[in-house]
Image (cartoon, rainbow, N blue to C red; front, side, top):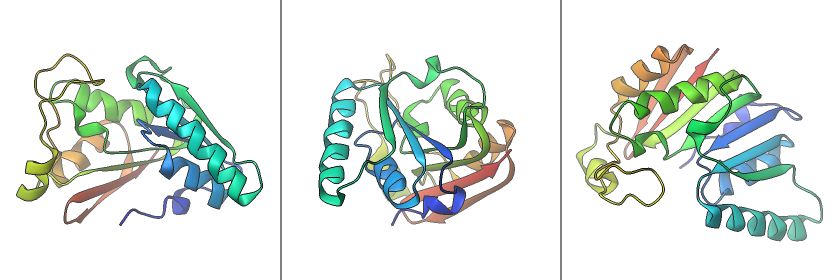
Length: 181
């Protein structure tokens, strides 16, 4: 069960999803909370999927959804506050080197207010077994990546990124971290 991201934003605010993949979270957020959502992903096929999904949803609801999709490497984005909320789902665990912390730092640097990170629960051995991977399609040249964060690691990394009032909730396979500037 995914969190209600609408609690962290208001209509009209600018929201960013890093590593958006299919874009279903961001498009749903834009649809239900009338905020402007920017979706970033490094995979060009993901961008195509996001645009097709958005067109299909717009056809069903007979109105324009305020979401924009861009191909981008999160490590190449400007590091300045541009969004009211920045979030990701299943992204920050992709790296096992210094980029783990850097990915969370970038979330914080892009946000004026709130950061929400959903990731695999590294405290749950079943979740770790499912999440660990040796594929290296778009996330870089590492031979191994995908080491989930534990609850304490995620909280510490978010606090190191300068976020305050960090709370990390644990739910079986997932962690949900929320912090504020």
